[in-house]
Image 1 (cartoon, chains in turn yellow, cyan):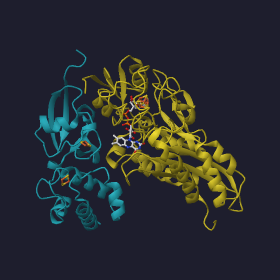
Image 2: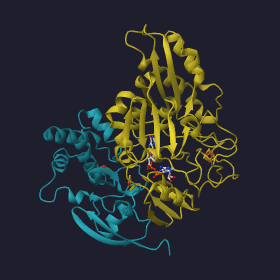
Image 3: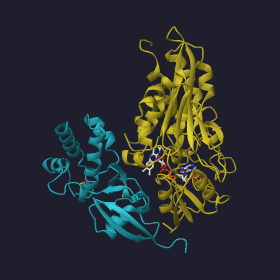
Image 4: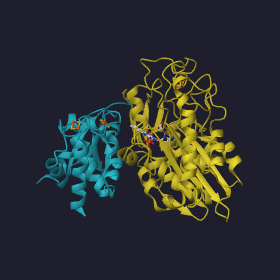
Length: 329
Length: 157
Ligand SMILES: Cc1cc2nc3c(=O)[nH]c(=O)nc-3n(C[C@H](O)[C@H](O)[C@H](O)COP(=O)(O)OP(=O)(O)OC[C@H]3O[C@@H](n4cnc5c(N)ncnc54)[C@H](O)[C@@H]3O)c2cc1C
Ligand code: SF4
Ligand code: FES
Ligand code: FES
């Protein structure tokens, strides 16, 4: 890891100013930044520690939603009573991510900014070609080992999967990312790679994430996050789904449904097509199967990642079944 | 020189220590190389194995992904500080259950287990497995590790 200067931000404004300087990077939990610095992917000249800033780690519930400070730890949010009661998909996405130690370190703001786990991206010495790391250098993954690469939202420049779990739940629940004065819908915060895979988030130099805001909804109250991976725990998603559903008084007709996918796309992937065919319908095994098949509309396969297609369809179906009212076939 | 060494005062196992290090020095390297506290192990150095688990302000964290500079003003506990007089009950349970083979992962397992029990995440074997999944054991001593933690958790109730 290349050496850098270290300083502590004294205030949010100080952090903003410092982060706008060339070569400076914010340090929150450090679990992405220091990892990538060790890989030789990140080489900050100055590291600006924001973990000593006060008042940015609160979880504040009100009747219309919850505001979670950017410095709240993953572990604190995962176990917050209000989060578990009103936004269970958020809690489930968090406690199934990383490990207990990492969740005690990692912050909500840093979590949204985590980078891809594409093995080519993480190894600059062995694989110089990576458009995300070095725009215009090519993509070592295309034609390589692609088991973990995305099938949705890819471009000719980059097929890297967005690895985050929390972000999938946030996109499903229509959360907003608060950047000080400005707010961005979670879905719009994560960018498609297109021809500029180096740009992953709708955040400008000099901006920092101060909070996330999740609105209350019946679908959020009845939500879940299902994560399937290569080992039972402590692994990134091979495929995952955040699902939230609200039913009509009859207990079987779907009034509102939200579905987003993880582990299979270049950004957290909301699937409006799945939602549209189920809305107003009675839940049945046939309806679920028909809807789940739409989850991978537009998918592009690159070699080994073919398995993600059927996998994520089944994950969507299973997540819906897990949230259906008791007594429905 | 912006990247010149910085002076830090750290509280480790109840004692204050002054040290001067480059900003990039991790808590793990500071513990092992500056303070000779080699009980905290370096496995992967990238957050993937848990061998470097220590407590910061009573919470289990990974020393390999923490800068020494980040813990100034916080309290750090390592395996050396766990049971100063007698063995900590979790250490004793690991001995009783033979919960190791080579022992390399053991300090990290024990630091993690102490926190796991304190967090209330050691209620069932499945819960122990889930909340201890950040500590890998290359020797595969997992069944005995789970048994040791289960016993220590029951004893602490
Ligand atoms: C072994 C391992 C396994 C993991 N498994 C999972 C998993 O299964 N699921 C999952 O979702 N994640 C997983 N992660 C990723 C982990 O969740 C992220 O590393 C973590 O959430 C990042 O948060 P942090 O606070 O440590 O960020 P940092 O490393 O401090 O920062 C990350 C980036 O965000 C920037 N940043 C930080 N805070 C802000 C802010 N407030 N505003 C703007 N920019 C900011 C930093 O400058 C940096 O570029 C894993 C990580 C490791 C090492
Ligand atoms: S998939 Fe994206 S991140 Fe991976 S090597 Fe190609 S350009 Fe780089
Ligand atoms: S050495 Fe820190 S997690 Fe492996
Ligand atoms: S006892 Fe050898 S690695 Fe766990």
